Image (tube, rainbow, N blue to C red; front, side, top):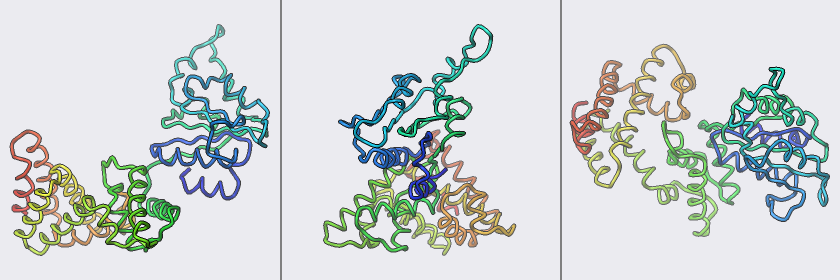
Length: 357
């Protein structure tokens, strides 16, 4: 289930039943965010310190007996007792060897906690938080059967737009759709092989929102995004400017743009990665478009997260024939190998390629 589904379940009250909840997945921001949301919903506060009706158990201290004892404890000052279990070894596989131990009869030992969570007391709420899970283990299967698993994967373009819009609203600022598109693109989150996650996106949103509010305004403009995120946005725009110049046959302009970007301190491998990704998409658009696929279908087939980028690059693809695009992609792969092997200097690699196109 996605973060939108947990939002719906919170609104509908589906999370309020006495059943286990597991928060997991690669997007740690969402895992941490909804841990706080659920804690506040069940206990009345995101704070755990000083609350006798909240138990937080970590890793090895969260053995079966400790978790069950916490759940069996009647709340003192609140209607509910909330038990948060983080990185339980029975979910990650760290306890797999123990689980596989056989008793004297040759049968696997029972998992007491997996059996117990089928009948959690009505006065308790149980939330597991695990950044890595082994879905073959008994505890995971029991949670999935008797409760709800929310697995937060990386967001697609629509999800990122929705997430970003909510973050801006929470910070008290508004943003128009076109400026939101610019911000989403500028985050770099939707690029392939990026290490940027929702923590970085949230930090970028905080910077832009703070800049606007400090100026006495509550509406974000394109100029605000450019002011607060100049390096990321400028590089992405420059690559498209270079593509514009190449499509129009203005190689000298393309080379000048490239040299200015490199002189400004941009990393050669980042630029090479951007060019490679862009031309791979252009080639995919050329081939799949010829087969009658729509932009949405092409985005899904190529495994991209941004239909906007696929549409934009699909327009550039129309300016090249298929064989030319295949050659360019091949040369980009060669350039990467040649730079890493020392056969060509980083600074000259892309300049040479642009001259060859």
